[in-house]
Length: 453
Image (cartoon, rainbow, N blue to C red):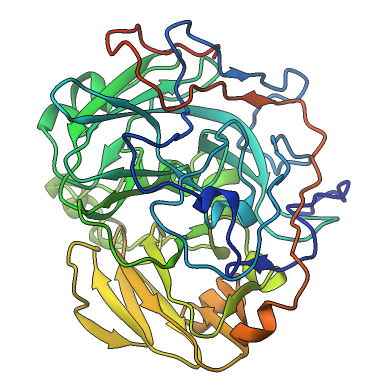
């Protein structure tokens, strides 16, 4: 089936991504209790997060989408050069929708309140919307479009960051326009009521909301995702993201990135019955037709990527500097394939499975991850050059899961001009505005944030 030619869609400028620069986000983010951290929750006045659906283009997941319905925000910061960031690198403007270039270093630390007993309270809001059509290839004139279900209008959803021992509240709002119930399931330690499987936590109806409350533990990196059946379809459509729980004693300073490996099964998206919950064969079905009851129905992805669109970091190489320490929070959220992998060219990395240890388990250049598996990668380059990183599975690489690190000599970087990355807003019928507080003492008994959904 053919796709119509679209107007130009631009994630960012042709400039490569600069990860040896120090951005404004790096300044003074060490101490949550005394520094300003932006919020994606509203204050006691319940400022609205407004999401306007495209009334002229009804969502129809049985057809190939022909035009994008997205919201974008420009990158406004101009990174300076060569530095080692200190602290969590919390995003200072959570009112914008990060494009795939921004998403790499976009850490949402939530709205922070210091309680009287000394505990840090972090509050987050996630809005589920099914009325999104996002480009999933980096073709500027004729991208492949996808009927996305999103947390806060991006695939993946926001990377939520916290510290071990924090009291965390995540309120999930299911948009009125949604056609399905949704939920939030987090990989970490929490009570059964907060697991997102049963009761109100496991089925948030369209127009409803639920607040998940837990104490962040243990430190590590964790996926989160919708757990409403069929789970593989809800994840395949985009309802997933990552949670980082930092240890109380921070890790050594490094330039940090988050990479969520994912794929797209277009049959599951474009066909109404493309995905169904697997069921074991019944005795009756085996007696009626053994061959039919035991046939294996295998899914298949047509595109693979990291952080959303296929080939995005090949088209926008990530700039590194020799001698600089780097850290990647790596999560595999690929459905319809049993395993995924990460391979680094021309180098080795230290690997921390699940990020739950302070010492690396081993040193390697390739790591395999099952569905939902994750870890932390630490490395540095001593030799300049262009280096590939990708899935060490040829099919995945050929279909979009690959990128490039452009490594320059550390002294050379000091003489290079400041890289400026900008994005061109996409004309859209859907907009999203996030109003948020600064990190200041507030009344912890304020009413919950209820967005206009």
